[in-house]
Amino acid sequence: MTFRTRFAPSPTGPLHLGHAYSAILAHDMARAEGGAFLLRIDDLDQSRARPEWEELIYEDLRWLGLTWDGPVRRQSDHFDDYRAALATVAARGAVYPCRCSRADIDAAASAPQEGVPTYGPDGRIYPGTCRGRPYADRRPTDALRYDLTKANLDGPLSFTETGPAHAGTHTVTRDELLAHVGDPVLARPGMAASYHFSVVLDDAACGITHVIRGEDLFEATFLQSFLQQQLGLPAPIYHHHRLIRDAAGKRLAKRDDARAIRTYRDDGATPQDIRRMIGL
Ligand code: GLU
Image (cartoon, rainbow, N blue to C red; front, side, top):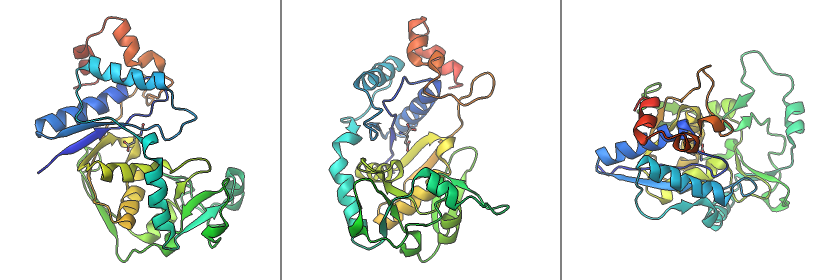
């Protein structure tokens, strides 16, 4: 079987130990399978992406001894592709412009019922206020949402997970998506696509067969599987790995510069030291 995986960092800060874990794991799995390891730069959010962070990604990965196959894919080179995919979905009448601010959504959803989730992988579960607004009435300041009630979905969707915490087959129905995710955003104002929409398009365009990434994105996979199915895209196999935490058990984030790979490099650590620190 072909095995094509990818590492997809956003160039919005230095790579830290958590990124190193993800990149090394995906790289080593691809090499062990005789497959391909691709590098994608997730610079969808042009207000936060910086060329110097992108440069540091290449430096850190090279220093870790990782090699990637083929050219790097940069999301900012594919904004037209995202817009074209959005137009295709919109032509089916399932996309509507949403004018709700975060505060509007909070207010409309402010009477939470016990046991009913209020947040999902796409943020606050959208109560559907703008559903029914014609797509033709969209303004540049609107977000564009997928109307789940109009989704072409007969039975439950499923995806395969091989990661340690949730290995197995997972299924989701339209009602579960409505309750746990809400109408997903396909594009935010001023952006060609949302994170979820761009990622499924990118993975399909690159022929990714295995998505290897952190546990924090496990819940998002239900939504991403839905988008794949609606777009008629192949479903990769998912592997969500454990997260690297600091001594206090807190998940590492970009702002944790102390854990930046560059800092360890500057302090004289070797790539072998990094592997040891993250248990690889
Ligand atoms: N770019 C995303 C991140 O930095 C990862 C996307 C993905 O692996 O699906 O967390």
